[in-house]
Image 1 (cartoon, rainbow, N blue to C red):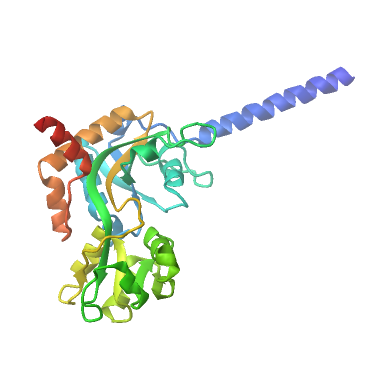
Image 2: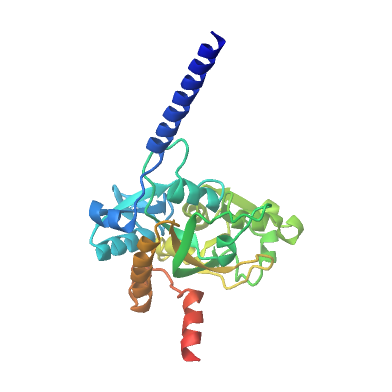
Length: 308
């Protein structure tokens, strides 16, 4: 009798494990290799939502630098462009896991085939945890297409010039909440600027207050600052030329990411991005949004090797 009960329990346990395994397989997002992307007729491009000028929705249409690059890539692959909107998590590693290689445990949806606006950073790519395991080995970072940097936009009627950030001990400056500019300005110089740092949900909201004269300056990424200045032509606002002592990385390359098993798709996308950078299409695209463009440092290294 005990043996019969034991066998029944064993069978039930095996059946439960089998069902759970099958559910896991069914829940797992399907692989989207290069051949499958081409055969399906569309490319899902992962972009951060509500993030002008890089990616945002306007009248139901995906707009911005990253959206236009995604469209160009899809056109070259002869497939349809489909936006995959990304809600940022706590870290870049979380965003890559949720949208590129695994998927969020609460969101049973198809992953992005490629993710835009990922720092092209070898240190991040080969970052190790406390056990020595690579933390980001599930993704491939490649295709640098822009060099980005930190920037301040200011009202010259409030401040004559911005030669140093120490000036913001006495003048209010706006930042997007929970971003590097927020943490930097709130802690640098022993926290002496903290009381002058004003928090906003995004850079656009900060610029509204800057234009209204309620704050003296805004800090953000250069393209964000350029875009908001472009939206407010005639306002008299200016961009500063100061540096940011204490920030380890003030200038960085921006690229894209795919799942590590989708390298063939990555190679195809990389070739298209490289063509855009080299033939001037990338710079022209930035120009259409009124943004300054700097070629990634990655190309400086390549050109340096070629010249030698």
